[in-house]
Amino acid sequence: MDKKTKILVVFVIIGAVVFISYMSLAGLSFENKESDFFYVPVVTGDNISAYKNSCAELNLSQVSKDPFSLVGKKVKLTGQIYKKEYTDFEEARTFMVIKVPDFSPEYYILLFYSSNIPFKEGDMITVYGEYYYPAQTDVIPEIANMQLSVIKAGYIEKA
Image (tube, rainbow, N blue to C red; front, top):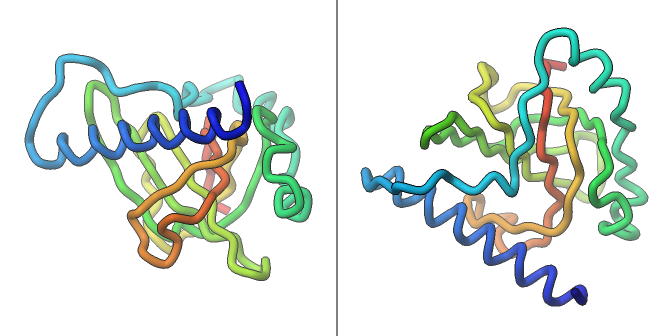
């Protein structure tokens, strides 16, 4: 599959997730389960320490130069919750936009988590999960239509 086809597939999937989220918020229901493409299982209990140790610090300089270089790798990132949306289909889901502090220009990352989290917008969190690229969101006008990195979070803690 060439690069343009992969990008198109990601856009179609994101569009489907946004459509399902919108329809759910509008009070409509679906018989099928929400796509798990952007989600990994939540890491709990005795597995947390090993999972955290398997994640390397996300190198934003490397990502800025070649955003595809870390696709599929387990990464760790600390950032501020800029926007948070919670949905509950058959399972709880959280979508967030994370703003990375002290990085110029401002850097935003999309975050998908397979559960609800107790953290709120403005909180600093450390996220452990799988890196993917590219994705887009229209939730925040200042980053609409930008190619953004994604972390499919397996574990999140307050920083």
